[in-house]
Length: 320
Ligand code: NAD
Ligand code: UDP
Ligand code: UDP
Picture 1 (cartoon, rainbow, N blue to C red):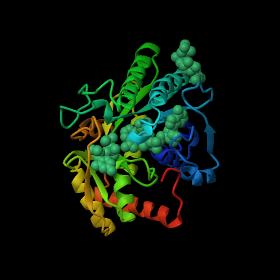
Picture 2: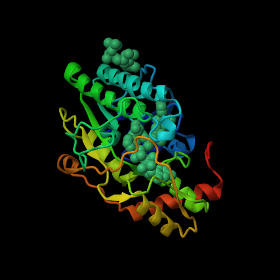
Picture 3: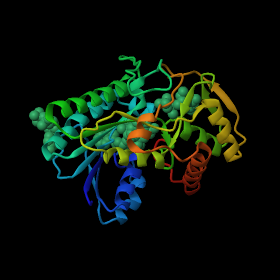
């Protein structure tokens, strides 16, 4: 059924793919973004859809609009971006969630919160199951993001219990794909940009730490399926790709796929950097009938092609 759907953070990496998928399904989309890390380039082709609307707005301030559904994605997601102004990061997660939940409460509409695997911190339970409460440093450099997102989850569950709203939480694990910011410092974008420009590939620590990388198209399918679950299903549900790789394996694969001559070099590991991360996605499989389809090699090929095109057109955003 046709809906008018609000996507906060809609000009970002995941948000722009979500907006596009919802528009393709025939919905109207209101994209709300303050363009902190998002860009017009990410959403430029969405203006071709009659049902697309853009509002420049910071979710830490109240928002009065009329919509049928809310996806709350607004928040910088890469460490260099969320540590640039950590107080604003916490405000975005916490005040942003309060305002968007207040909006959902007034309109009596369904709400989905984009949470993160970072709520597990540096996990001692592996792979991570939703019941695990996490191992998070409350006062470190990553805390503005991790604790902000944990508080946003708390708010969702309290709005559900106290105000009887219909809301859902997905915990997103490392996701990659076209429209990642080329200077966001994340490992996939860093390694691809370094490989394509012949720079040294920077492995932090010994490169033996692990991550599990999900291709963006798979991730968006899971978010939409979660939004379609029955009222009363709140989650949280892990979404991600359980295929786990060491950072060194990722570097070698990217060198191979790009045919790059870049060397692998080793740099210090940032503080609180989790040693390992892999989602347990049994809940997503059971509840959503979903599992990722795109293998790392295949997803990286598409992502490399995107960055290659950016470089050829010389369309790099500020900060690169
Ligand atoms: P992104 O930085 O590309 O997108 C975030 C968007 O939110 C940007 O367009 C930014 O301009 C906007 N934004 C930031 N602060 C805002 C504010 N105060 N008001 C309005 N807009 C604001 O990041 P992404 O990778 O697309 O992440 C989207 C969401 O998914 C985030 O909530 C993030 O925490 C979550 N997530 C992403 C990943 C991942 O691997 N990409 C993993 C876990 C969770
Ligand atoms: N809010 C909003 N849009 C709305 C309704 C509420 O931005 O359509 C904001 C409002 O500013 C408030 C927050 O959401 O600060 C929480 O709303 P709620 O109704 O839960 O709290 P209250 O207004 O009672 O403090
Ligand atoms: N990393 C790396 N080199 C880089 C960027 C990141 O070795 O140029 C490592 C980083 O230390 C971490 C992993 O890659 O162990 C994933 O980092 P990212 O910032 O992408 O995501 P997160 O740590 O939030 O999972």
